[in-house]
Length: 163
Image (tube, rainbow, N blue to C red; front, side, top):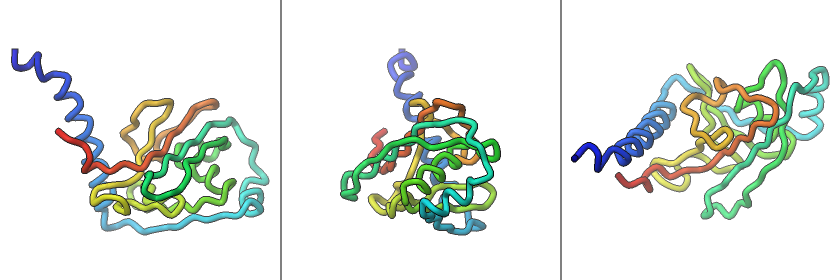
């Protein structure tokens, strides 16, 4: 009877704990380096001049309300050399002049978008993403997209989750 009553809650708790652990692990890697990427539209065209897109995806960025920054969405191209979630985010940010901060090391982790960085709005906060509405538990550079996919980046304060 006990197991039946709490089985739905257990699944939710596990999901939140996994997200939190992945976030904490990624942010605590000491061998990482911070990299701020900022491109103009001209630079974007130069970078991709010899590449033909293999698909198009929709990218949405949901900023924390406290930031005062308006949410944004639009199209990004996928390229054969990089059809990952991170590649699509880079393409979208390059096209729209949005700063992107990432840490690279054993994995690549998005630490800031549009000037909003992890821990800016909460002690345990940062950027997470979904693909076609599903939570993905892998680094953004490891998750490949297909033509027509939809990626949503959302700033989350993990301390708001109650158990």
